[in-house]
Figure 1 (cartoon, rainbow, N blue to C red):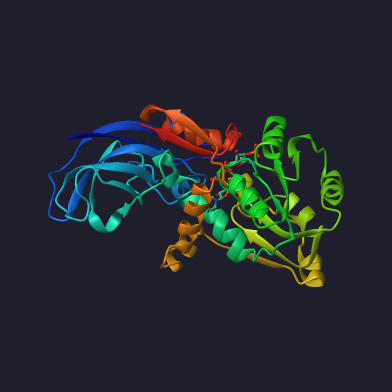
Figure 2 (cartoon, rainbow, N blue to C red):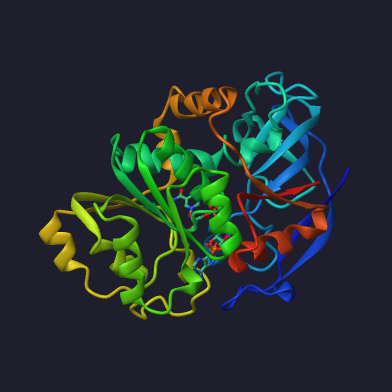
Length: 334
Ligand SMILES: NC(=O)c1ccc[n+]([C@@H]2O[C@H](COP(=O)([O-])OP(=O)(O)OC[C@H]3O[C@@H](n4cnc5c(N)ncnc54)[C@H](OP(=O)(O)O)[C@@H]3O)[C@@H](O)[C@H]2O)c1
């Protein structure tokens, strides 16, 4: 069996370029006991892959998770036809040992299997654990989330509404702002690209959250991080999920966040970095996933997605995360 793979040709310098990657074809080995051969159904492209490339070398397969179908098996737990998720990378087919596979649970009818990579996968659960466990969100509180129209942000906003909270989101276009308010029920939303400076950013938040912010779900980083802290209430929590604005930076020592000591100390704020993976691993009973599936069954969560069709579009899909073309989870269906 032949497989196509996206491989790194050259380390990214600044913004990733199409000349940094390429597609190669390989022959897969025969199966050993315990292994299965999978055929990819959809590949997840995610901002963290930009970070992982910093530790990759030319020739490495682009890292990432996919949902796949077992097409050959020497593992009784994963018979032919089983649906699995696995971190096989950007590859059309792969030989994978059973301990690197996760079974996709039975979804309610009409729920697409791609959700195993989005709302019911890493991104959705990152929103769930980040908001409810790290952010310790309580009913009636006010949440601010940036990159609000993206894979994680769209879930954060909807969960905040489910928990009876006020939610404010920022995103990079008027269309996204409209979507957040009319389709996802955000109480307030604004286009950060139309805000000329940080004092105006602060005034905007003050106007939209007159009672202050209790939980800041941080996806973006940069100067605005400091501006948000001044709008937070005493005992506020920052769930530091990501900092996409810095991922293509070539200088990690250039300060982009001014001193945060004053609001942190005076308001007793807590900033907690976290990964969805770490919290998922601790959730031995999969309570988070079970609750999310229940909400999908009850029609309480929408799952906007931005689908690219065809394996050859993986890199294009990846770049869209940095140009902000997407609403919801970006997937490549094969
Ligand atoms: N901690 C974890 O376990 C975990 C898991 C998943 C994701 N994350 C993090 O969560 C964040 C969102 O990830 P996602 O998968 O949901 O991606 P996403 O939000 O679907 O896509 C990325 C979005 O970020 C915004 N963006 C891109 N470059 C930007 C820049 N320079 N300045 C401001 N905004 C920019 C764009 O939206 P706009 O139109 O709003 O600019 C873009 O649509 C990322 O920081 C990611 O690393 C963390």
